Length: 214
Image: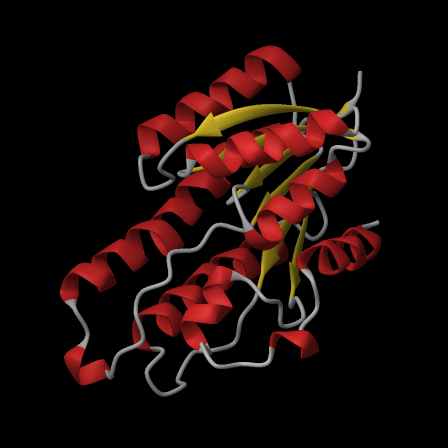
């Protein structure tokens, strides 16, 4: 049976690049809210002989995420790797003028959904011989105008760090990596006038990350 990888946030940017790279030796379960991006990813994966299961889902929908995990359990009995690249990016704003709706969305996707996913992914990873979960840090907490994103990204990573400490002896292995700056849509919202030529392409970043994961 081939290895199974779940990538959350797989429709674009680093998540898509990782899903495409993983498809060389994994069946990839690609989860994201954007159906069009998932379909484009599937085309690229199939063009190189890989296989993927597309799961258009709002990660803030706890019942939908639990249903996906149940389906994976029923079909594959495990997942060898979970890569969590999903993030909601609220518009940059001063903390005193933060839109409550943006904060609510950020909390739902970046914090609550992450906690829900950890709970339903844990049994799948524990069933694998060497289950691994990978999260990505972006240390913006406390930076000016990054109030909603910085706070909720830090909370997401804090959840991952706690899980890593709790499973250090028993598994699964939980890894928290910091990718290089990349010319993604997320970064373009933060730094719209930036020179993209100095940034690392997502596919190159994906190769480095997979090498580090081992």
